[in-house]
Length: 440
Image (cartoon, rainbow, N blue to C red; front, side, top):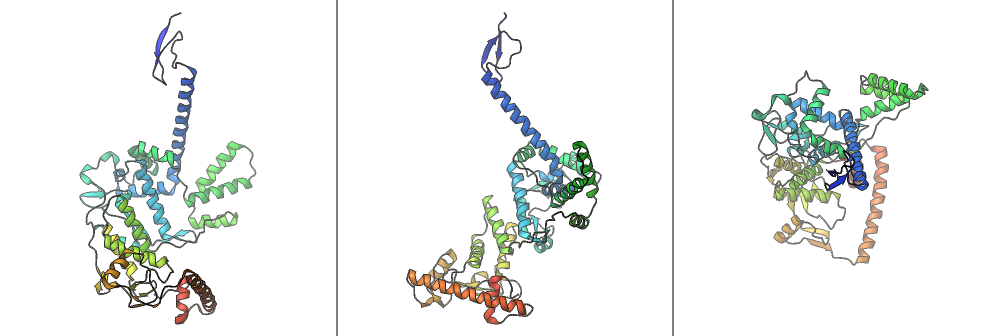
């Protein structure tokens, strides 16, 4: 027999054999290669399924809208890795959570604002997490097309005709352009992340399933054909018509109600996110925002003891209009947009809004760098009562908790009877804690 020399396709070693066209030197190499190929083929099939699902997902619809708005797929030039797409998807989800829900409907308090605007004459802001900031709807609309620097953009002179999109292009054609433009980056992302259907598409699927079940079909192909036909018809229904049909068929409708985030929480989260990208956010402004955010969630009267002018929290003087929390939030947002910070609040420097009280009930605990700075400058406040032993502190804490429960019970009873009028002064703190009344 003629001995032939081949190179193993798995280990790349030379081997001799009398068989023509043998690819592997032994069964182990063949098995390893086959397993890897099968895994690769399964992954390719998974990616293809997810590509087909993307146009029916909320994130896919978002990409489509933004590409159509820009008129070119090159607005996605900032998505150079799977992590970039993941960051954009996570940012969009954060914006949804920040808004909150009213009976299944997303509120419209916050939007994604472009640092570098999309419609600038010389450049176009990119659709990527480094160029987007979650801001209040009013700030985003007021800012409009203004640009003060920063962000990520592409020059309009670099835009190519082949990536342009107009009203003549169908959604399928636009999605094809998106897939071709992102290429392997989109594949890498879809290999790790499965797109989620929109709430509307999930509802259509449930209604179609319910209708097909009522027809008592047995043939699998006929079930698939009729399901597709029902889904196609339901696509033309309005959301209200779908919800009405769902109620008649006893199909569950997404109706969650959930509170959104405060402006200060949103601004601080965004500032910290940009700090991870290497952006230097004004440390003094961050310190003020951090202090206001921490004191809001802290109930220990010995901590976060500074008096704050214009604050909605304890030891604060609530203003009828813009609170200091809202002011600091807006200045953090302006900082991320490279705009000038307004250091004046309520007619005085922002720094003068934080003061050490002359007297406190208990000896205070300095827990924040803002307190450290002011205490170093002005000294500790006088305490009416000195520090208690750990046992006394525990007893005092239990008494305070019992008093708080009693106050809230009385406040709840008053609110159920007189909820439409302003409460008496002694019940206001309890009602604010319970979220039943706000003094503005």
